[in-house]
Amino acid sequence: MKSNRILSTAIIIIALFSFSQLFAVNYYQIKVYNLDNPGQEERVDNYLKSTFLKAAHEAGIENVGVFKPIETDPDYGKKIFVLIPLKDLNDIVKLEDQIIRTELNSDDSDYINAAHDNPPFQRVETIILKAFSEMPNYHKPAFDTPKEEQIFQIRSYEGATEKLYRKKVEMFNEGGEVALFNDLGFNAVFFGEVLAGANMPNLIYMTSFKDIDSNKKLWEAFGSHPKWEELKNNKAYANTVSHIDNWLCHPTAYSDF
Image 1: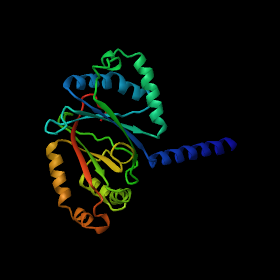
Image 2: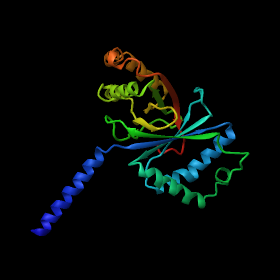
Image 3: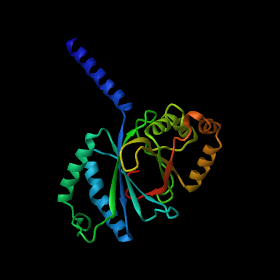
């Protein structure tokens, strides 16, 4: 009888833990490698593929996304975006520790042991985000198209003030903008509030599409949707965005996304 009670208690604890994980708020780290030339792009690619992703996986981070702006994007060849989903902020330290250990056994000297006058990048930007309440967990899409056709769109919305920025976050969550993206099938990967970054206050989100035509058609549907007409004409959300950055990207061949 006692063993049954212990078993029942254990089952309840496991169930509660699973439930809490289902609705847990995730965090994200985005690393942006800014590049000067194709040689740097190749060196960063090799490092990410052979060393960084290996370290992330060994640190318990299952999926890491690596994305590059498409040929028609102004930043083509100039940036590489790395998306790192985190269970909590402690994962940042765990990942950095694992990277150091992995680099010790890596053969990638072109990146790790690069000379001061021949660096593998111009600069590296790091952004830390907290998941939106309406999408507390990231989504890994599955498409039947080749990776070189898939589109992952990254958008950053800046606010002129912190109050206006928070109203834009509210517009996504309570206002129903996240729900509209989901209803239309934008295959959102994440929506996040930037906690640390160069362009605060701002939010960043990523949507995904099987190809560029799907991207165009869905944005056309979004722009003409009655719900969007209602939201954009709501005076409570007026002037909540002062600047938008937008990148259309392909996932790299080695990306987990």
